[in-house]
Length: 191
Image 1 (tube, rainbow, N blue to C red):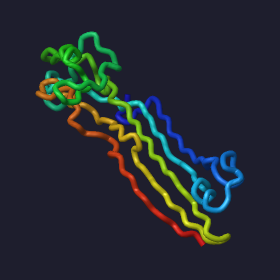
Image 2: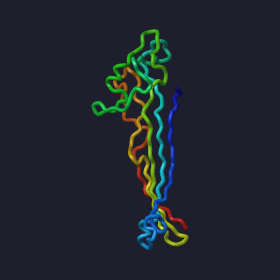
Image 3: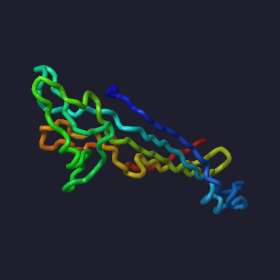
């Protein structure tokens, strides 16, 4: 598989006017201050979920060539070996029993796993906005908006350390591919 291979990607955007206030399903007969409070709300956002990218597990040795590092041997391993586990308070992609399956290939041979044999963690991010429009006059309006990146504050982890002779083999060193939750407030006057 290529380095940038993504088997499955879902990306969607949405916009929805909330059904509250004058002329809407809920509070349709509201007027004055009540309509100013409950009416004019809308929400929008973007959702991205994609399968992890492939990565190679290396032996850390040059068993076949002085130029290219050999891939690792892995007994009874499939492409989907690995999932996020916590050991001693640290994030790992391969648990202890999975890490025990790996070994260095014999001199003069390359590993049986091959290039980009394993799949990294899934990427997920949901960004959302909440907007409130205050109609002041027929031509003058004020929009108040709250934007949140990564609403659920769900980390999408990067590839694990993928060299078997490393002391931290299989560990995800707290590196993430998305940002932590960020919230921003803004206002806009339309005339």
